[in-house]
Structures are given as structure tokens and as C-alpha cells.
Image (tube, rainbow, N blue to C red; front, side, top):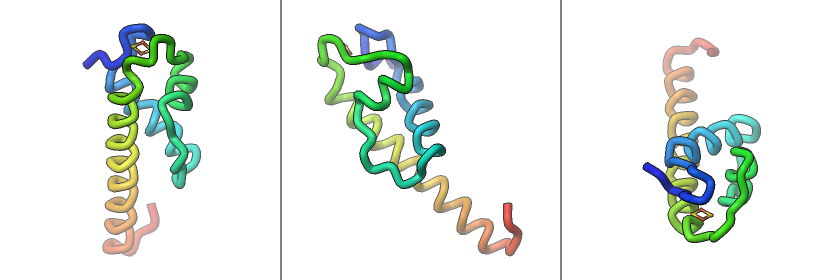
Length: 82
Ligand code: FES
């Protein structure tokens, strides 16, 4: 789904960027559209997409944290460090 028409960014692009930024620093609570767009080599122009982008960023961030928590639980349950 195209989110930003000015920069031709899709929801997948935004999700990938959030995952990359979260991997670099798992406790990032300061992710905003500007940071994510910068990671993608873009910058907001008309800003019409930012509200939707912020929602996708929040969802992607929560999904990333959920996957990390699940992986930790699995490691703990198996007793094997990954
Ligand atoms: S639609 Fe994203 S900056 Fe214009």
C-alpha cells in the first residue's frame, strides 16, 4: 500500500525501516515519521501522509517488540541461547 505519494513509500518500506531502526536500538521510543523517512533516504514534503505513517510506525514498532518478546520466551523455554 502506498503511504507517501510524494516519496513513493509503501507501508512495507516503512515497516522495513522501523525494523532496521529497532534492531539498531531495541528500546527506541522516539521513532517518528521524519526519522523513518530519513532512514529511507526521504523527507516529508506535503506532509499529507504523516498521520497514517505514524500509525504504521506504531504498529510496526509493537509488532517488532512482540516478535522479540516471543523469541525471548522461546529461548527461555528451550533453555538454549540463540
Ligand atoms: S504524501 Fe508523503 S510527504 Fe506528501
